[in-house]
Length: 121
Length: 506
Image (tube, rainbow over all chains, first blue to last red; front, side):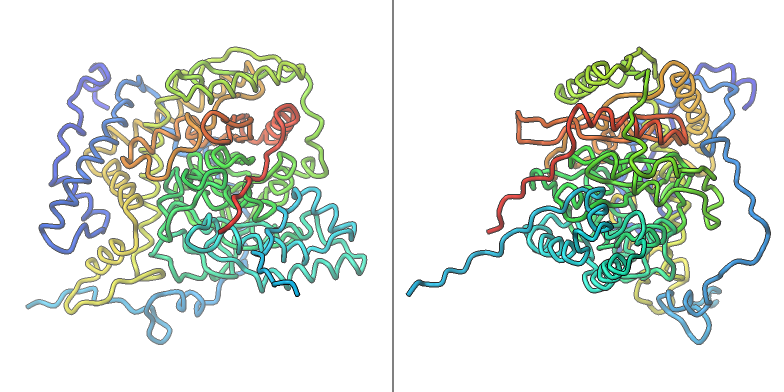
């Protein structure tokens, strides 16, 4: 946090929520690897609906901006977040074949996936 | 000659409470196999078909029969079949079983069979409990009404036009309708306590780390906990005692000795109990009967010698904003694994399509609208440029909420308040996401701080239909024993849960 940010009273900066636009919804859907619709028309309608819903929810979340959190350490996990350490010994593991069989598509001992490298054409 | 009349098959009586049933099975007075058969007939009559409650997605009749007969044989042979002998336990379908499927009520996992068993399930079976089936939930445990289930909504046994609450909708409905002795649910922001409140049963969210999460399909890992739903506080304690404790497969599981919970140890109450009732819990926007139930519970505590003390939790409402950043953020990360490659549904291949397009279509086809919404919210609050304004700030609020609880628990032993702002609402009654999220205002903070909480029945709202009312108690982390003892005191005063009266089929 820069000194300028710290000096600014909470809630004074423009809310990112107010500026949320259709392009943002498309961008986060792409980041989340979720296709929104099969056709551009259908996508426009889905984006419109999502935009309204996300603005509502993020608008509520914006109440966090009224909270004075200056100097407060983030808490990522309850109870201080200390993991228990176990002895480093081999334990039971699943048979690789069981895991392969859980995949929707497999070839031999491998999980089959579409081509990862695109063809140049 | 009398004409033969075909009577509809008679609905078997609901099973006894878990405690009574187990005692009777262990004493050889009751056959686990016979109680199973009666319960299976009850499920067939009440739960299945178009007008059914739809609590169960799968019922394991054959597998459970074999197990029940094994328990009966063990009792006959004079062996100890365990502290849950013959208890029929329903398991939320986001908890891995090697029998049947584990679908999370999502099309994405419609056919998925887990190659391993959740630790909590293994412990139930080791204690002699019988996993009778898998219950429906809001997809991936995201929802507060039981309506966001890919296989159709779950209904409230007390009024089929109302929701059972969520996300452990089927588990709560199965307990309330007498379709099992107890059930497992999971609670990320209220998903055990709120449906327990709506359905009129007991629901315990243990402290984060008290129960292993191994085999629970992750939603928000820093919030998720597995816990019991049951008809009585003692039954919930018995199931909790069976599943709790450290587990090598979950490095966040805590090493506590819960043996003191076994054998009715909670039915002693607490001497000199201090009950904190924060003003922010009795908001005037709550349904009046909800606040009245909390006041009746406070009076009942006082009548039993407890002291009601004022405490302050001014951050109660900011918890919702905090939760709806942290939980979707963790969900967007956890659910990234469902990409159609390693397991789950994969979209049909199209020529020339890239791997990334397969991900995006598999996820679009597999996830329902609420899961998609939460993943998008989570992706947004974690994205470059918004991380500090949302995610970091929410984690700072999280610390303030945890510290606020610490201060409150210096002045009181347990907190008393509502579980939800209203009793069960009508199916389809809340269509916009935000109004659904607001249901969670009294449950999210215990998850945010990782403390324990329990919802117990507190009479009925006779004004509309006989809808159950509930109150919630919360206690510091790993003080489940105190929490359960206080809940037992209240249950003694307010009366235990009643099995829902099911209108006769036809």
